[in-house]
Length: 236
Image (cartoon, rainbow, N blue to C red; front, side, top):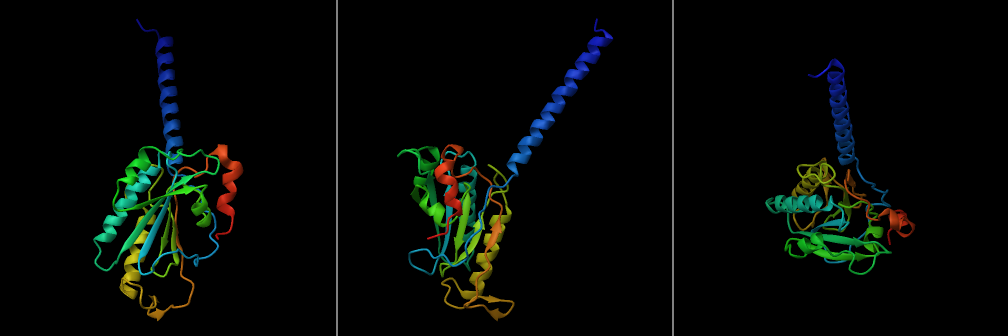
């Protein structure tokens, strides 16, 4: 027979378990929705070498971050959506796999890199030492840069709704809206001046759109001495 003291004990244990579970869930939810760092950009005029006339989407990923897979999947979803929009011309996507300055050769190898290397929709580049991440001031895995057909910086931030989460996000929505509106204004080759509210803006600085980026730091705590400063330097 269960005594009154026994019942009280079981109730206390149950309440403690429920409380700990709720606390743990709260911590995890807060972690999922905590954005990574987006350092200030110098301006929106940093150019990208190569032919003009196409939109470019650059993504920087940590190859061993569990959040990177969701970022890559959302990039594919975004490219499919853009491909289905008649007003949008060619879009080139490059995923930079960042190897920190103090990481040994081959450190970047793994499932994510293998998956990317078999994807015909994106180009993959090894960012040894984080030089490109430094140039574009990317500090968090999943950081996306969008350049217009004139090579101007138009977007910087993330395209997932949370850490390791898939689905519609503020970043993806803003990129879609921006490219669609710009393409309707200037044509797919960017041959005419951008127009905003009926007024030409040729020669004016373009607005850089941002959105939270969710992911691991591109440089782990073990490489802070050489990596943390990369995101704060001026682009070359």
